[in-house]
Length: 196
Image (cartoon, rainbow, N blue to C red; front, side, top):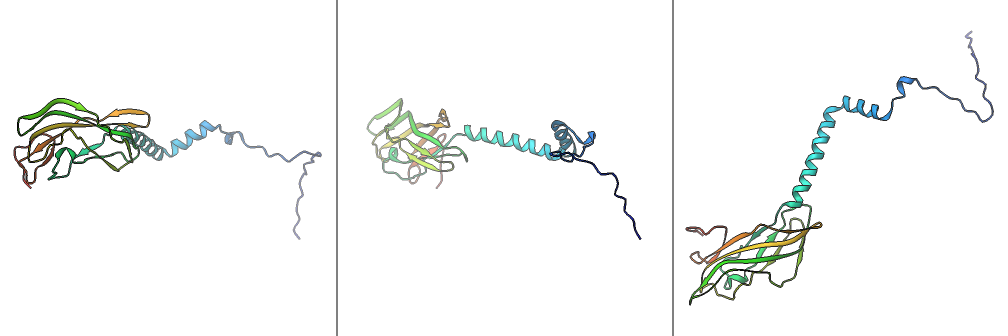
């Protein structure tokens, strides 16, 4: 027949709860526990730190990345009415209150006419371009037909806000190439020759 030892009972007073003492070696302070965790999982901590720096750097780059400007329409009857396509290259931030500045290096048309060394900010609605989206503008510098425009060298900039910062993009150069078939605007320096 098995016997059981009841042992000593702890007498409790009214309102007193049973307390279990925790060994001192398990009562570590919070910073020590964190350091111990990092020490045992340093690879995961290092990866997390690198990922955090990468995310911060990517966000900063997204703020300061500039828009892309292009004139893709060929064969326009009125070259200066061709739409200037502005693409927001940021994947996070919008371009707010965006408008274009149009600068003229030199424009020459038949009959001895032309203009040079001036810039314009045309009165056209300011728009907000969402991340990855595009908006169209015009630089109506002159109402000259394509068959009378002999040469044109212009510069276009975008003025806009990103978050609270007012910014102006770097100037993008466009040249009119009357020898192309059909005549068109060319982004960048004037080419010596162009194939369709």
